[in-house]
Image (cartoon, rainbow, N blue to C red):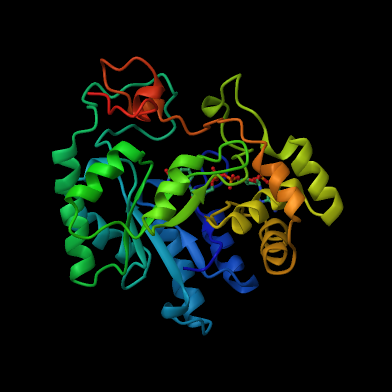
Length: 314
Ligand SMILES: NC(=O)c1ccc[n+]([C@@H]2O[C@H](COP(=O)([O-])OP(=O)(O)OC[C@H]3O[C@@H](n4cnc5c(N)ncnc54)[C@H](OP(=O)(O)O)[C@@H]3O)[C@@H](O)[C@H]2O)c1
C-alpha cells in the first residue's frame, strides 16, 4: 500500500466533480493511493478520472484503490462491492472495508441530533455475517485485501476469535490530538496496516460536526513550531508525524498546491526525534468523528459507540 493516499470525502464543501478532478491531478503529481467509499456519493465521477489516469499510461496495478461498504448494505456486500468496482472503473479493489460496524443509516447532511428509529447496537453475530461476505470477496479475488474501519479493541477481539481471514488493514481516526495509542498498538501487534483518517484534524468539516470541546491540531504549538522550522503548513506536519509514526494518512484536498506540498514533504522532509516526541505528547484524546447519527434509541451518548470501558454496549 502506498504510504500516503488522497481522501475523497468532499462533505458539504466540494462537489463530486471537484473531488474527481483532484484525483486526476493528484495522480499527475504522483499520488497512487485513493480512499473512496460508496457513501461519499462520488464514485462514478472518480471512476471517470481513474479511466483517464489509466489512459494516460499509469497502469491499474500501479494504483491502490480502496472502497467501503456502507451500513445499509451489510447484507448485500457482494452487490455493493461490484457496484463500487464498476463505478470506479477499477476492475478489482485493492482494499475493501466495512465502513462502520453498525448497520445504521442516516441521510446525507443530517444534523448530529438526527436519529434513525431503526438503528441498533453492535451485534457480533450480525457483523460476522457481513465479515463472511468480505472473506468471500477476498477468496474469489474480487478484492486483494479486506479490512475494517471505526472499530474498537473489544469488537476486534471478537472478530479475531471468529474470522477465518483476519483483517489486513484498519482505518481509524488518527491525528496528533487523537492518537488512539492502545488501538494503534493493538493493530500493529496484530499485523494490520493502520490507515489514519482525518489526519489533519479535519479543519474544514461542517459546523454540524463540531462541538465546543474540539481542539484544533494545526494550532498546536509543537506542530506550529515544527512547521516554522521546515517552512511548511502545519497540516503537512500532521501528515509527516503520522508517516513517521508508522501509519498511512489519507488527507483530503482538492487544491493542487496543498496535495502537492504534502506529497513533496512526505518524500523529502523529516521531523526530528524531539519534534516527534513533542507531538506525541500533544494527544488530547479529542475524537472529532463521534458518530452521533448512528446511535440507537436507547443509547445515551456517542461514547456508547466506542466501548471506552472495554464493554460493548447493547
Ligand atoms: N473511514 C471513515 O469512517 C472515515 C471518516 C472520515 C474521513 N475518512 C477519510 O479520510 C479523508 C480525510 O479526512 P477529512 O477529509 O475529514 O480531513 P483531513 O484530511 O484531516 O482535512 C482535510 C482538510 O485539510 C486541509 N488541507 C489538506 N491538505 C492541506 C495542506 N497541505 N495545507 C493546508 N491545509 C490542507 C484542507 O482544507 P480546505 O479544504 O479548507 O483547504 C482539507 O479540506 C476523507 O476524505 C475520507 O477519505 C474516512
